[in-house]
Length: 318
Image (cartoon, rainbow, N blue to C red):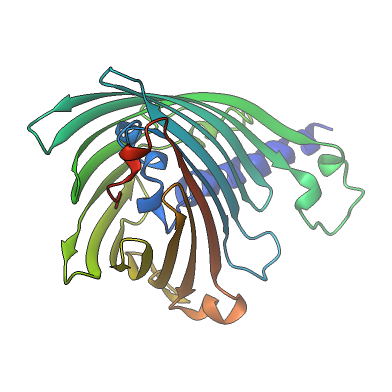
């Protein structure tokens, strides 16, 4: 029995270590339609009650491939410089599951007539678990894997700053300030299985090309300790301030036997009404793994609710 427990602890530790270095948090290609996911200072910047629902299926066609869902809701409080936000998310990667809820507070400062600066903080609560039922083992009757699910509750925090106006934004955020440990096992070296600090820098602006078309370039840089730095460059054409058609290129440092981690991204968003918008993105992998899956699909539904309809009369590009 002691050997079984040792094996159980070792397997959990290895899985958690791989998860903490490579997966961390789910990454979404349509991050600029849902900035609250990466920066708490975004809460309330749209000035009215706003929500976004995103579902991402990575490496479609592969068993156990990562899948992620995120629901964010945020709003500015009337007559105050305060924004509040709520996030509920779920991230699955093989046997590893992370379900969490975030509560966000942001304070907005008026820099001038056209520009504002906000500072935000998020408190988060995560449920981390490993489900053995999703692992294919040689001997299904192995006592080390029968009826065992390792699970723990983990608290953490994030903070960020966000500078924005009608056609420009720039943000910097730090997630997992506390670098909380998963606590799934007491195996030797298990403290490596934790959330590592994750840094995001993103910026973008909109320039009019003519009376019909605007162009929005954007940049996202993400860094996690002991993981490859990721940079993503996007360019989106906006037609009649309602139809968003864009493409992106994601660059990763890691080079392995299957090639680089680089990929191409296609993005489409359409505002059905001034209050409701839908979006879709597709990631195509530029390495050998692209031959074994049908890419990554991401779907988005967004909405805005305001008592004063005139607030929605001017277009919101971010």
